[in-house]
Length: 284
Ligand code: NCD
Image (cartoon, rainbow, N blue to C red; front, side):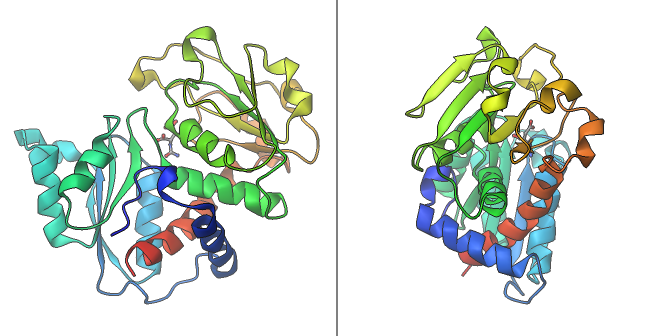
């Protein structure tokens, strides 16, 4: 049984073959998961991730039990995570879970009778976001994830998408990371091999292949406001790409959306393509 709790659970070979299939399938419908049921169990707000799993599962002919507001489930009556997971694993073939606590997906996997996919556990990890983030780089960088200067900006302390993506890109050769954040939102362990830390994004923008912009996680107690200006964004080289896991608040001006370097809407689309293949593999 393959649980997807951390990006560490997936090898580069597994990911390359998933991306290859996602690239050729492009979200096309089929009946591979006919008769299979996915539970979407979300203890934290979500627009993209939960809908992306819904879209992916139904594109492959499967069905979804949507528990997107746990306040209307037995969680509100005080049911434990374990009991909820055992219950839903008797009714479905895979559980996609987002939760407020780091480590909660692992806890769920210990009692679940079906595969658990971590859709974000507190300030822990978000491996399926990393699958689509990795695919976005693969897609726009000639299928390569090496020799990159990656600049990550924002709440690097609490952003789980950053943590999983650094783990993934850290596996490939000759990647260099620039971590840009204020002192209290700095990236923490595990550090990749090559990195540089600064509070001034202007220092590194010209030397960036992938700019990964993130939101400040107010719900995790982070306080800070920042926005990149059009002038700053125009400093990054023409061949570079700008990514953001979304939702955005003020980090990237809407004006930049029509720039060919802006790839954040591609990411959302690629999420469906990749999750569809992931579900087919986890359920096969
Ligand atoms: C991210 C998350 O939930 O970690 N959202 C997402 O899944 N695309 C990023 C965020 O909330 O800032």
